[in-house]
Every structure is written in structure tokens, then in C-alpha cells.
Length: 347
Ligand SMILES: [Zn+2]
Image (cartoon, rainbow, N blue to C red):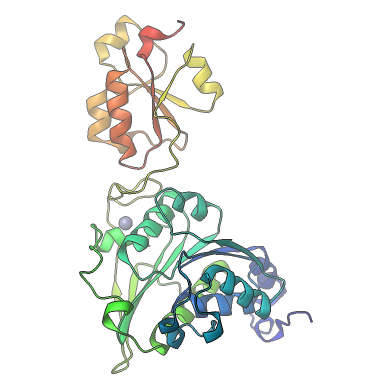
């Protein structure tokens, strides 16, 4: 049987063109629990072309009250396989890519880059900040939700300037355990269910470029007394894609910090921008022709680079360039250092 999208095709914001956009879209869902369950149900039903699912857990019987895609008979099985089967049962035309793993500093950036949008359905701050940092560095939208007992909040990050990231609002990751999660604090199943449904809605709105995407706003909902609030959440000046000064934990996929070359021309051939970080006197005495930003200036203001290419830092012996590259990487800049410096070129 073929999926039938007629009820959403009737909406003027969607139509056949919007449906085609959804069919081409790739969405990464991080966490397949109380938020992830409704998210994948609605996105599968809507005909999103590919769902990337990542979760390291196996189903526990205590999950079922808030994760209705699973059944009691499935307890003990890996959630990614179960969720993948659930997607296929709803809509076999959706491609599913499963990752039975934890999102980590090693895999986050690559996974986020491979999708159009990432949805945070996790229940811990470490993962939320990983998603945030990867989304900022990869310049991809992210839809966050956090639930605590009867209340929760939703936030959308997009590279566009009006959107704040998590670190704009909470610069330092809150240590897990400081604020309760479902496992410790308890939750009624429909509460994450409602937030997950809203995340799916926001994801479709973003993919379809629809109106009302929570730009620079945080949506707070309290299901105990049915109150809601939209509060302003502007981006901080330090937070500007692609390299937010507030991001430190996550590294880009790191090519070797140091590289050996015979000539600087080789660097250009490999698509690297060469930055000479020596002093003005050194450059005058032995010019390289490369762009010159003295080390001190670069460290004080990494934004000077404004390069979308990887940069290769060079100095006389390779010591200053190595230290500077290490420092720049903390700012999310994929800097490398010329091993042995200019003295070693040609040897
Ligand atoms: Zn930010």
C-alpha cells in the first residue's frame, strides 16, 4: 500500500512542492524515548525522505508509558532497531539510517552535517550541548526540547542571526543531575508526547520554510495549569556561525594538528589558506607572500580569520604556529600548523 499524503497536501503551505521538499529531506533524531517516539511517528507519516536515528539504549519496561511506539514484548531490544521497524510500518517509503551509539564528540559533527536538521530528543544536558555545538559549527538548524515533570521548553536554533543557540542562553553546560530528568523526577507520558509532537511540527515548518519558527524565542509550556509563555531569547554577540566563541567542548573532525610540506604552494593546492603569524620584522626579513596576522593579534581576535577554508599557520620553527593552532581549535576553527616551520620547508 502506498502512503497517502492527501490531508497535508490540501494545505496551501505544502502542496505537491512542499511534499517533494519533505521527500528530499534528511532529519537526524537524537534519542528515541518520550520525545523521539512522537517525533519519528509524525515525520514518518509526513513523508520525510530519510530519518537518521541514534540511540544507544535498549527498551526498558519503565519506558512504555511515554514511548508508545514500543511494546512490552520488545523489552530488552535495542531501540534503534525497534524504532526503525516502527517507521517502516508507518511509511515504508521513508529511508531509515540507524546508529546504535551514543552521540559523542567524535560522531556528532559528522552526523549533523549529513542531515538537513537535527532534533534533540535527549534527556541529558551533555547531549543537548553536543547537539547545539555541532549544529552551530555545521550551520544546521536544531530543534531542542526539555521536559521536567509537567512543564518544558522548546527552542529552535538556526544559523540565521535572529536565532540564539543553547549557549547564548546558558553559556556553560549545566551538569547532569543538577536538574532532574525523567528517570529521577518522574513524568506523565503525554507531557513529553506533546513536546515531541511540537518538535515534529517545528521541524516540518523549518523544512517547508513556513511562518512561525520561534526565532530568538523560547516557548515555555506548563501542562499542570496550562500556562504558556514565549520569552525573548536573543543571540549573544560572541555567538556567530560558523565559529561561536562560546563553544569549547566539541571539536571539528580533526585533521592532524601538524602537517609537513615541501612548499607553501602545496598548502594552497590542498585548499588550505596559509596564515603567516610571525612578527612584522620577521616577515620583512623573509617574506612568504602569505596573509600576515601576527600571533598576538590572532589569539586576541580569532574572528580576524574569517576563512571558510582550513587554515595553515606558519612561523619560523613551527612552535608558535602549533600553540596558536591548538588555541584556535578551542574556538572551533580548523587550524593546522606547519611542522618545523619555514626553516624546514624544502628539506
Ligand atoms: Zn549561541
